[in-house]
Image (cartoon, rainbow, N blue to C red; front, top):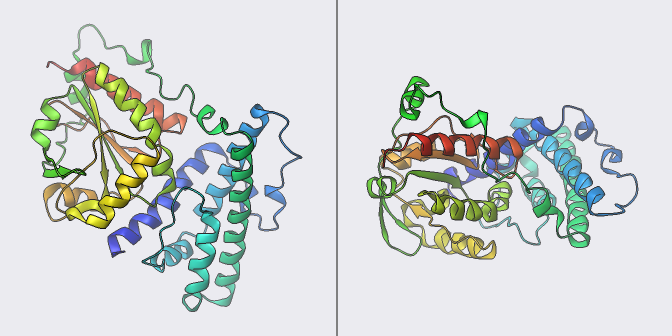
Length: 328
């Protein structure tokens, strides 16, 4: 794993998850290391209770990962280059514990003990999450229900005397998405100019294979791609590990996409090109951009998984904005 991959792992696990935590809770539960905070009041009696417990546990885990940023940075910079912390069947806390133990000499005694306690707490949370998901497998999907529906109504309406393009220009968000010529994961040539011009709107999702929130939204992104196709749009993924045509990374990405049933196009390009340099300046994962037919970036990037309601709603507003402004 090169430095870029390690940095991506750090930021995807820490920065992104902290965003989700800040949006969900504003308390100190996860900061308490005595273990009481992850003790749920009995077992869930039904799927509704299980869903609420699942969200609470996720918020606690996210808050733990958002604490002591410098320490977590050390952990991820020390991550085993050959260790793949992957989504299915792997406990993220166990991954952290192994990484912390292997890098013990990098930390003071106090830091080491704090990290071990935090990672152990995360491991316990992961076990509880797994138990809930095994007993109520529908709760993961239920937590996303409604988030991907296209919003309608006054929020998305444009003033009759102002075109969508004018409004977008007025907002100052007409930065061009960097041009690229690359390939998809099957080796087919992809040019950004052709890609964008063929679609009324293109959603570009940056992710990487060992980022849990990234992998967690793949199915939703696939569903969104199908919705966009009916509206003359498209969605593509950019797995940052696959830049420069890294064959091992491409194979891993294809495997993860297949496991999640994601069939939309994923592309890669050279890391030293305009788009590659643009990618290295993305500091949280997943990050999603909306691009219009002319290759302009619409609005601000969406940082965080679209499985979160706020991110999903923001993304849909930008999509509708681009569609309304499209002159085809």
